[in-house]
Length: 285
Image (cartoon, rainbow, N blue to C red):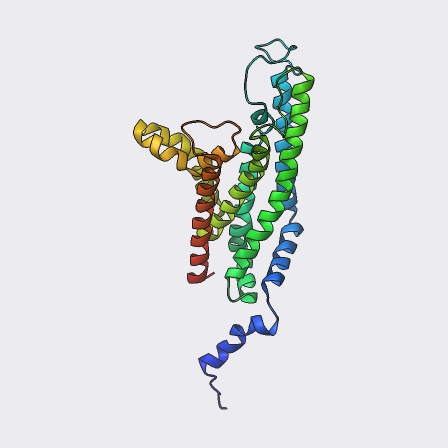
């Protein structure tokens, strides 16, 4: 019996040419990721829960603020007498909703590593990066559309409740209000994309979720324990504070300008997505 040895370059040729033979384009990868996203029941449940949370909490807090729901300290009835920003009341559910959206973003990327599905994805797309771009694009577009609907409904419904209860309300035409509503959808989408990047970078669901919320939720509080001069210089540039400046209707002297805050938040996304891309190319699946 004789054995024919195939040169390594020839043996690897089919794998290198798989994208050409099966016409693997970025559009096809995007379609594949879209099928994955909408076919997972957990995705539909998570996004649906985030939408309900944004709308439900917005209406609930508006009802509490306007006195349409009785509270122990006020005895119920009568309009609210404080000057809390009515737009912020309607969008109160955004902070909690980002827990869901961010976790979902992590699972979309890190989940494939835990199940081993990522090997099939990368075998079909040897260049690797189109998979990451497709995941981010599909998830970002889907999330933004749904969260924009949620924040818009939460604002309109919340303001209607506030107005009906005799409390101060806001309109989309008021200065900064439309930016706050759109910015809340951007914030939720951005946190989700950050979750995808961390999931692809760390490849571990628990570690990625912990890192995401340590960065976006815990760090702003912990940094307050440092010397005040350092806090004043650094705090506005933290990711959650930066995007918070874009979402806020009224600006403070201690925060960044709205569009500067958005730019700083975008830089964080570029850095983490870029790091995920570099490690995806260099590390084995």
